[in-house]
Length: 322
Image (cartoon, helix red, strand yellow):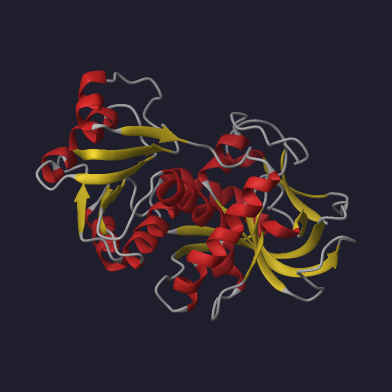
């Protein structure tokens, strides 16, 4: 197979397309002929040597989500057959022409979606559903804030939260990006380079916040959360060390949590996939969720895709195609 390999820790130029042995197929897995793979910020961290792959996945081939056609099934697999079109969450190795993945980590490609659109779904939807809805317990009628509203996570969180009846707020870095958030369904979008999101949302209050920023955002998040509010962290791009006013947390009965998805065990991811197919796939198949693809690159041009990701100039997802 062909695969994009991290030849050394460093900048985008260390990504090289090379020949690699085809993946070995375990009894519980399917082999996917990959047609498209999503590019995500954890891929950047892995390229720099800061995010090692879980055991059993390649450290030198990034990629956390794929879409393609099943070309082989393991002996214990009954729910899929050769020729089925699927998208899947993988622990690594997605930047390749083939990948072997646990069969119960796959989902059917939604109605009307092509491979590129389907490849944009797994990593962000698994992350958002696990953190915002399972961990954060967001319910219809509550208010929700996502920082980085035009990131892959952001466009996913806005659409699912709105589709399930929440009032949605988002932050983004330009007026253009704020307009994109509003078009996706956000009720209010705040340009964090021009406005203070705490001042903008302090009166309204927020029930659940999904934060990937950390740093100085932490105290502001605490201040705008309603009583019984939930603050969920999935990254800390501006710093992991923060100061917490414990008394304020106690008075407002705030729950602070967070998680990383990549290292979770197979059983957790399988149960999460099942929950997503039950609760999110109907929204997508009903046309209430759209894939937001900013740019497509051939697999051989993964370095350019990483350059774009690091520029933060994109709105939505960046996809590699075979």
